[in-house]
Length: 287
Image (cartoon, rainbow, N blue to C red; front, side, top):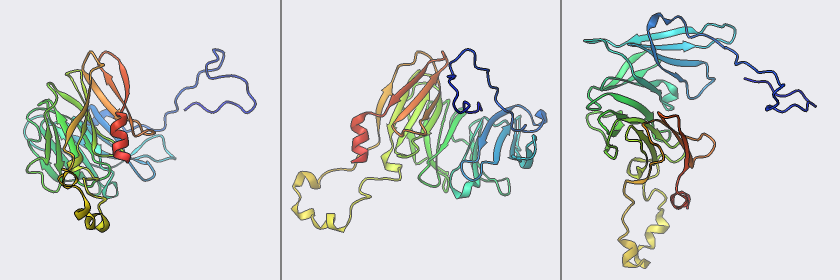
């Protein structure tokens, strides 16, 4: 990356006379013999020296050595089955000491143990059509979100993958991206070929369910509460807002790493839109 300006210098980065800086190549991920790369995922914790790449039907674990310009292939595994199986996307889990990776191929979602590169779970028909994207709940172990060409977003407990724990059917075309909020995992963002971005409140399967802060003192005051307060129901999962600033397919959505209330979406026509979580919901979550 570009070095800092020299101490005492008066040139600004916008100065046309300033020399252009080129990005420095750290290493190669080996030859292209494994096929066309569909996804590269950095280890979400640790020293950042491990990378997973998905190429055709191969899942490859790389060790990035500082002393070499060539990454070392630490281990690998392959999809086996009928037809030409190919990975479409993958996501590294931030839990379990970063020893699990989820991948998608066709309509299936699979979990892998990076220590042995063996399969630990498989959801054969996770979606009715192609799976487009995956994301792990950052605050709650075992919870995984997936989306695909069947217009659905599904939430899974990887300990029991027989049925999804929740399904969203708010989009009317392929869902290209799904992302959990990094800090408040009840906030889930999705983008679709229907040109819409949808912000959902999945409080029932979040790490902060209704009533998690209730203590004994609160329970002892139940008799003093009015009837309308006693009958208060927990908040329900719902769509918070639908954003329609795009005029073409939304291919990517993501949350800011610096501001938990800020998110961006990118569409096929090159339009980048930045939005904020509604202020009323923000204060409801915080207070």
